[in-house]
Length: 434
Ligand SMILES: CC(C)(COP(=O)(O)OP(=O)(O)OC[C@H]1O[C@@H](n2cnc3c(N)ncnc32)[C@H](O)[C@@H]1OP(=O)(O)O)[C@@H](O)C(=O)NCCC(=O)NCCS
Image (cartoon, rainbow, N blue to C red):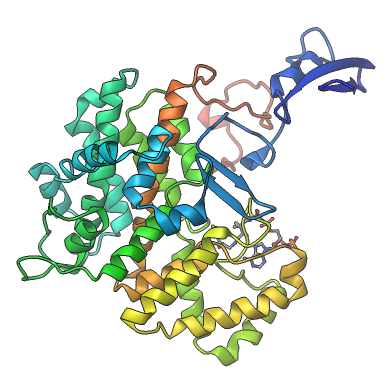
């Protein structure tokens, strides 16, 4: 027995060995198999990265079959119960939970970078009154690249870490100001005396009072939501962050790209779709009818199913409990009964059970955001705030990994063979390619 994959190329009858390391074979090992001397060599074809590891990472571990999620080895359940967002961000970025002294230093650094340049404020004021807050967030984060040109020195550790602190600190301010912009309310400046989540809530909700009074249970609920959303290994947006970063672009434009990926309804936009679905169902009595229509292929049960989790998403279990705590203060969200009934029926129904479709993180998070008084357009923004730490941890790991190069997939060319240019008056057909 050896840690080797032996394969025979049926075209030539030649047998090859490829070393197996950490349960993987290198795709480049297949290049040994060539049908002829001028053949490039065998490639793998893996649209959507269904079976390809693109990095070695020490940040987040997921076992989708068992429903396990850990940051740097710590189970998500323990972090959600005992940690804070800033502590978790430190864990993701530096690899360890901070000591008292490190945490004080880290919190001080982040707190003192929450302000935005006044020109950023003016830039934000230039958006239309109804601009989607996610579009604003993406654009303004990219614009920060022009305020901190030193950020382009991505090989300099000190410079890198300065931008990491700036981004973790400033994204909540941009997020809150995009909300205030939509509401037609004055932007609220950060309060250095408040903690990370309390400061965010103050920038969102403060009106005429000299100091915003934060309800501790809501602050803790948001803290838990932020911890749960902080990272999720090589998901679509993390992959974008690493991919843009692989060209040595600065972290602001890289993070803007990652946030753009998060915006899509199959990724961070799903919680918004869940709320739309619940509102459309409208009544608990209509749940069986809705389930039947999903089973008949008319749409999906949003907030159910996951590419990686084929078991209950551990984050969904924690969020459900957090939702109960929030509703005790804000009052019960009337859509909750519909969600609970949907979950109950789906978890017993063979269609969902046989496909291993369970509630994911988005099934309940939207209900909490709505109970906090946030409009659905803010939901992906609420996801982007904590995910900033995860994106940056992934980016830092990527730019320091000696094995990484510029991300550049191969393709299988399916287009036309070489042909001669045709003068416009001789072209018979309209172009068919979009
Ligand atoms: C998350 C998601 C995109 C993962 O998709 P995927 O890994 O590519 O899985 P597939 O689309 O191949 O689905 C596998 C099977 O389950 C079914 N399925 C997957 N999610 C479903 C859902 N939410 N409702 C109903 N059926 C679903 C598919 O129709 C397919 O059935 P089939 O084998 O009969 O064709 C998908 O489950 C989904 O669209 N969920 C709803 C959106 C959502 O909540 N996204 C947030 C993710 S955190």
